[in-house]
Length: 221
Length: 221
DNA sequence: CGATTAACGCGAAGTAGCTCGCGTTAATCT
DNA sequence: AGATTAACGCGAGCTACTTCGCGTTAATCG
Image (tube, rainbow over all chains, first blue to last red):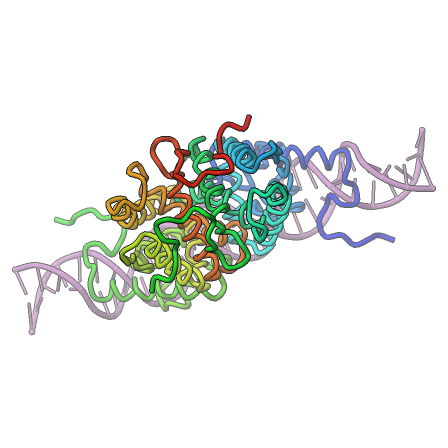
């Protein structure tokens, strides 16, 4: 009896299958670093990787799907620090992110993944799940900070980590300018100040943090 | 003598030309609100707008280009407030942004534009220029705040406005979750706190802002 | 170590996305 | 208002992307 399977690579994951997989993912990553997502076509991936076009279509169906798998393959791209203080952790993580996206390959990857998500619903959920998990993992540094008394008890760890990453994605996807180390510095300082001011508290935000003297952002309308 | 022109709509911009343009842009905006960018094909735009397929290709060449023009057409989508205080302005603008992106059409638009920019270099520069101009315009509220003495002299207005917008684009493009009013509240509070802490100063960031008591984000390595 | 068959390579066939040429409609200028 | 021709509608062609069928190679299991 033969088990029904839709895409190749699941019943015989080792040897040649693994080799072609790696060749394809590497080829895509390099391609993203050189010419970006704009010119990333199935044919170019086939040429660069040496894997036949039909094989690509059979296993991945589209570039969007390949790019998606490349993302999950990159999970250990940015290390999660533990320096002993939240400012230190934020700074270290921010610089890790900046280093990853400072390279053209990193920028190309995230741009490609977002573009893929815009066209393919499956890619969209994959992207969401990936970053959700990253946020939970990275949130550990916020949990530690709360335990140390560095931040309010009601601080939402995921919100803090999202706020740390946000400036980079804005810079890459919207502003479309290179990611410099100064951005990491700015992001770390900003998140630290905002978190201490209670911006990421579950109580709806703006609780006083002992640093108010020019009026907190209260009702303005 | 006949002036050489590459794309229609420039020598006779009025009447029918303007009408088809509006029909197309409206159709695309509605389509983005219903099924998103994934299913936005030239053929669907043609059907929905009642404009012939060949006309679409002649005038815009691709969906990416149409989406681009829709973006610039939307320039007045989010109003720039002037409440008298920076916290008030930040809060009002953030809620304006949240309202725009709270609707499926808004989310679909920005997602489409970013996806278009990933594939088409011209769309990329259009996107960059658009937001660059927005940042300059919105930066006026920061300039006023500095004049009032609410923020340090060396505060970079564009950096502040970028920081205000960043959480929304993260939420839409990366986290892929709906934009709620709470996000606006959080973003406004965060930027206000961060700006006062000097996170957006030109001096490289972390100058003390009179609110330090648990250690500023100094060297951690 | 041999049998089984998943995964791959290859070229041809099929399908969709895009362009072109021609006739018609209606902006723009005189 | 009339002449000029830009912009549009229409359908047939064309190119590029995607899939299919078959033979070959090499994982996996007995």
